[in-house]
Image 1 (tube, rainbow, N blue to C red):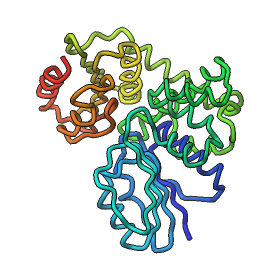
Image 2 (cartoon, one colour):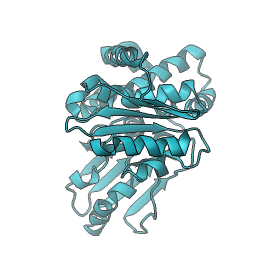
Image 3 (cartoon, rainbow, N blue to C red):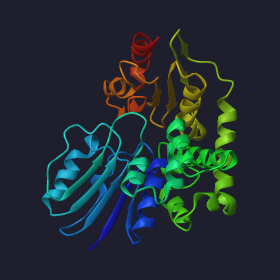
Image 4 (tube, one colour):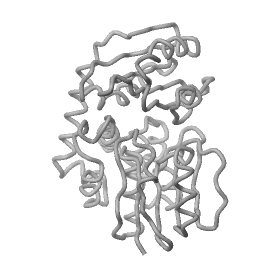
Length: 317
């Protein structure tokens, strides 16, 4: 039997897999990519009897590939927090899916494992912009303020590293990064001992500093749109910049657009909790997706830039 682990290359996917493999040590093949590389199950060549574990990857965007795996006799475990639509009923599928607000995939894995490796879930929640959920989890571990701040920086740096159009934009490819993390049971030890954390942290802060004084492309009473310059650093920093704006201005909506190599834009949208429409609903109208408070669009054609801004202003301005 082959084990294949399919995971989003961001903080949530990395930390979810780290928890599972600490609980269930096993050699596995890794299938991952940049944060917006969503259609990962289509890359899985599994056969009857194989076990595929999917972490933090939208079922809605991978439905056809999932059904194909199940029809071939592949067993699938699916952990995710994105809107999934109807979840297939199949004896070969174990689904742990919860799209309610304030939760991430690593928190679902933490729940499944009874909190055995909770430090990774705390880091993931911070990385996903769920600071209060991270603090609540951290309180159950009696972590001090300094330790929580270290996990916050780890989560944000892991998440930052996943943003890019291709892996060439990233500081470290996610599969290589996971192999380093796999050497540590405690995320605080990784922070203290490995130079890779310092590299990711320094790169994130440098990219954020480069956009910190940007003026918005459009600004209204309830939100802002930012258009970043055409550069690899923009493709890395777009989601992290959007998260930072949302943390600093919790009652406003934000869209951050990073130019792609083909002239289109990748878009990160953040909206306050309880906003209608949610970020996921708004982005689906442009063939995107995500969660209620945080969503994105993989490819917004150049011709749709002004229509996007107009509709964003109408929805959130």
